[in-house]
Image (cartoon, rainbow, N blue to C red; front, side, top):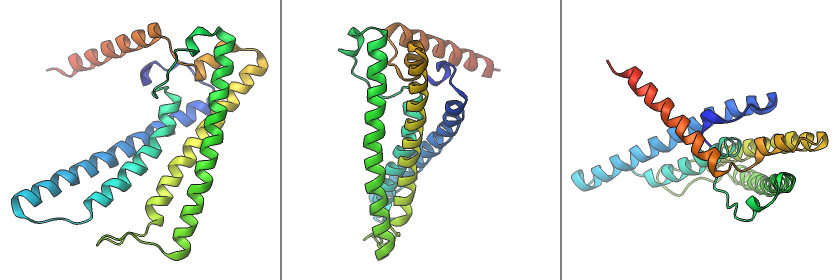
Length: 208
């Protein structure tokens, strides 16, 4: 399901979605910059036998930070891969309960991740650890950005789980599916067709 075709969400999720898309773009931009540095590094090595130094390290940091910051938007927009062979065989209520169980598992897993990531950051700060490259970047800097991305993803998952539980208490099974359920093939096709039409309209409008 594309971002343009996400169903209406409760107010807390609408705010989280807006912020998540912003940090998603920022993370993507960071990865693009890292890719550009890698290209420059390759050209310098092949043509001028010179190296910028530390580019591989910066690219690794960019990949880790950019990926972590993308998780929230991916979860809200249902852009992650889901294997629904068994899931699709359940009825509406069964799928809703599985959605809640999967979100609860995600919150539990990410809580563990955030805990240990915090421990790693504290250790780096305590010992003043820095990278072993010529850049000698304090490890706490990329680790803090990485931890912030994981923490944001945890917050998004917790709020989404809370919204689903509130819908469960109301007996609103359809709302749970709209918030956290996997879209079926027809929904995905409709979303892709609508997105294609939208993009084609934008391209025509941009023509002189």
